[in-house]
Amino acid sequence: MSFQNKVVWITGASSGIGKALALELSQQDALLILSARNEKALEEVKSECKTSENVMVLPLDLGLYDDFGATAKQAISWFGRIDILVNNGGISQRSFAKDTQVSVDQRIMDVNYTGTVALTKAVLPHFLEKKQGHIVVTTSIVGKIGTPLRSTYAASKHALHGFFDSLRTELYDDNIDVTLICPGYVTTNVSMNALQGDGSPQNSMDKATANGIKPERFAKLMAKAIRRKKQEAYIAGFKEKLGVYVKRWIPKLYSFMVRKLSVT
Image 1 (cartoon, one colour):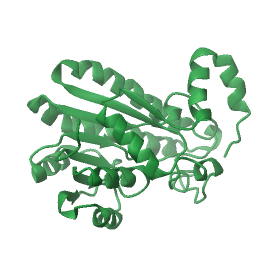
Image 2 (tube, one colour):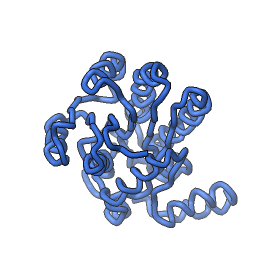
Image 3 (cartoon, helix red, strand yellow):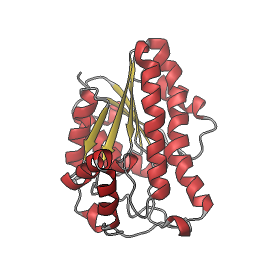
Image 4 (cartoon, helix red, strand yellow):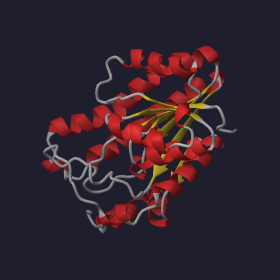
């Protein structure tokens, strides 16, 4: 599959993985719709794309998901179709469960899970009508395992796996693909913007995040996984991938290992 002239709608496109993927797909001559809350940042990403005329900006807050049907219609109207929906928007967490307000738990679930599901459901009738489409979801390695300070974040990502694995089976006969992308540590502002127990941003970079995969490299690998229509792809360092397999095959050893992790 080539991305040339494919219409790709990317959420969380104002920075980090979303921005890097937008720039990568722009180089591959895709037609892009970029969404996030920060319209100014989206316009800056648009200006960096190879052909800005092939990029549309559509501000979107995943936490305000009651009228995504109208938003999807607007997105479809620009290029006449959507070929690939990349659900990349989300927020992280850096707080112990005991210290996290329930309102913060709800905010994380609203954005990471419910907002993503709602946007997918808004685009799904369009995919079903044309009997073709590709749904991509950025989850996380912690969508497969759990680590300290990320209880609700991990829960939201686990929920995405459950929903989209089920959806994939339902859509098989409709020629609609579902790809789950599981990042490990990537050098983005995700830890800077991560919510603490009271809902305030952490405003500091985790050491592991700072030493993670560069977004540009990640975007190339992500684009490759999308192009190959992989069902699930782990794009992460050795230790993060190891955690997934140890958890699967030797869960007691994984429990010991994760207790030894640095909480940052």
